[in-house]
Structure formats: C-alpha cells, structure tokens
Length: 245
Ligand code: PEP
Image (cartoon, rainbow, N blue to C red; front, side, top):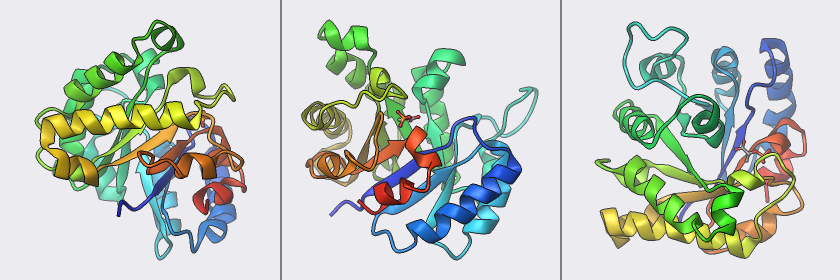
C-alpha cells in the first residue's frame, strides 16, 4: 500500500565531475527499481543531477534548505532556489545538521512546512543518541522530535520521515530489524495521535543507519519500515542492490 522509498544521502562527497560520474554509474543500475529512488548530492551537484535524471526513475533531493525565500542569510539556499532547478525532495533535520549546524525542532518544522508549500517532499529525520537509547529515553526523544517537527503540517501524507538512530549512522552498527521497526512504529503512532490513524497509515517511514545490500531485505520485511535513507552505501554501485531490494 505504501510505495517504498530508498534515498541516498551523498553528504559532503563528490565535486561536480564526480557527481556526473556517479550519476552515470548509478542511473542505469537503479533503472527498473520498484521503489521510489532518490539521490541527494551536494547543492553544487543538484542542477547537473536533475538534468541527468530527467527521463529516469530517480528523483533528486537536496540535503538541507532555508525556510526563508531570500535575504541576508549568508551561505544559505532557499526552497524556492531548489524548486527552480527541479529538486523534488529535501532532507530536513539530519542528525549531522542538528549536531554541527544548530538545527532545532523549530527550524525543522519551519523548513518542512515551507518545502510542502513549494511542492517539495520533505524527508524529516529523527533519532536518538546512544546515551538516550541506553537510558531508556529513545522513544521520548523520537516522539518529541516528531511532535515539534511536524506540528501544523496541513497534509502529513506528503511527508516522508526517516528514523535514524545516531549511534547507527556511519558506524557500521545497524539497529536490529526489531529495534528499527519498533522506532518507526513510534513515529507512526505519534503521527496517528497528531493527524489521525488514516493519515498515519499513508506516511512512509524510512530507517537509516548503516543500511547496506546485506541488511536491506530484512529491514524492508518489517511492517513499519517503508524504505531506507542510506549514507555511505549510497556512493557505491552496489547501492542499486539496496534500491532493488
Ligand atoms: C545517513 O547519512 O543518513 C546515514 C544513514 O548514513 P550511513 O548509511 O552511512 O549510516
């Protein structure tokens, strides 16, 4: 019922030439995937990536955006600017942005609402630290991030949520499929409380954190996991095995 969505977060990797090369490698490999497939290159690679992905099954996403249209925000890029180059998705509130760039639940909320008004699908990220998990606070953290990050959204069914436990990102340590499924369930239950059960059943919830070709099948077999947000493994040709799980 919910179409799976597999997104690659390329992070701060690949200059414009390497972006072109990776696009040339990956586009034919992911063609025919049944899941919705998204690549998120750096801002500088977006225009090229959008051009190259035209007539393919891949949508292009940005890794961040500002919620204002324009103005004195040195170094920032607005949603309108992303829209103008044909970007269809945007990652919002990735844990690296929260940790290193002062992203808060409040800015996540503003950005998600803004992206939706522009017809860009926000992929809103949430997830707990290792300390929070070990002290039994994971659920409260995820629920709190969702309540604050998603409030006031008009059509929640257009949002994608990525549950990414911080301790599993880039560490090679994946959450077990049961842990991942349980946490994606916390996301869905929170959405049900906020927006109703019907809407919650339509929202796609991804798992992210050291996803690779070996573990994707088991994760995707879980009832609350509708896709994956993939970092390191999205830079390799074998990303196609994840996209075609
Ligand atoms: C990410 O960057 O969102 C991520 C999940 O990274 P990795 O797959 O490398 O853990």
